[in-house]
Length: 389
Image (cartoon, rainbow, N blue to C red):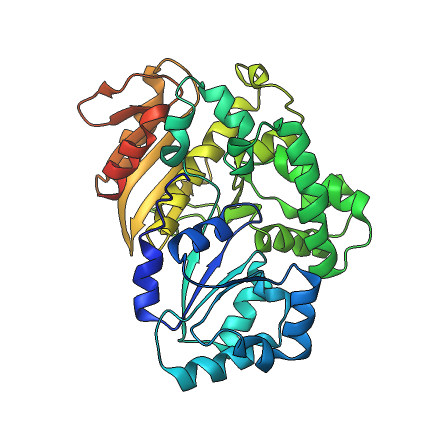
């Protein structure tokens, strides 16, 4: 089993709270991590119809089977169970009793906030981080990683990405769309997801997206919510300090896995990403995703933004700490460092109080520069260490 960066956080949370909840996209490794971390706890999956029927029809009897707690998988499938869990843990008073997993952010978080507030330690588990899995594929190039992505099944099974992603979309994403919003026009929803993938790394213009898909603005807004609830996409918010300039207030859209975005955008082989218009956006999608994983795996506030003014000047990623900008990060997919990549960072640093300047690019070699730390893509872990320090 590949060691997850988030693994040490689970026993820590179990020492503080009676319940630990692991949420994240389907097939991100939540169950594997829970069972490996708590091997002595019994396991129940509410995806099993018989188990779900018992948990739904007789929640008290279901929990009585586990006097010392259990791992309960896909717990949002039995919503009434949460109130009984509250009564159970309040009466027991032990920490680390139950470990819950769930793949729908809205369903799980709504029930936690209603019934289990203050009783749950929460971990958001995304697919593999690059540093978790890189050693398993040392000969893969950047294009291979952007094409394959980081979902665990694509690294522990000999399954082609185009086969797995097609099944993932039909089995999970569209099922979530039906269950969360009763989406009936799956053809339109499918087209919407494809359009979103083509826009990963861009400002999110919901009106234009809706028009391209032939749906209303309100429908587009709701469907973006479905994709966020299913941990398929995220919205990166702009940093609000204007430094005397007018700023965009529009968030940027990112897929949380570059491989899924690449497949949805029509990429069918890694070599197609050696050149072309998708290479840059998918590289940026990957970098932003790695920064997000690092924060979530460490149970730290995300504090990630971007900056763009009305003239189109932009910094891809800002690492902040409250009102302070700690690091400004630029993502460039080119294999050779170009001199015109550095001045935008210098100009922004002069405005923002000289935060650390970080450039992550698609080449292999780090480069010592006087004012900017330049990291090759394989060194993204060290780049994050520097940015978050």
